[in-house]
Image 1: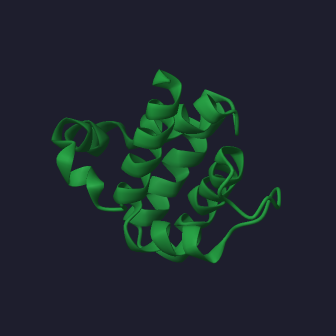
Image 2: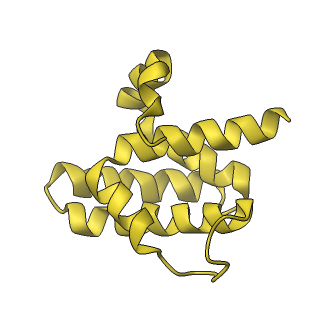
Length: 111
């Protein structure tokens, strides 16, 4: 579930300091965008969250989440769109989303 991140305390601690890098690594592992492009976009999103522009900040990672869902076969299969549920997840709890995506992608890489 979306709050399964509570079981992964070490990842949570690392995310406090390395969220843009972790998010970019997840996007790069799936092939959505190159790592350094992802770092820049994730860093911009973090700045938007910190300045209170959450509605704008959730757009980029929400769209990437939709792309990941399409990649793994449980999205709407429409390239380049943003699903409302993915946007809402990033709007309400972005850290939960980052951890959930990281665990899913890392689990898929291990198989």
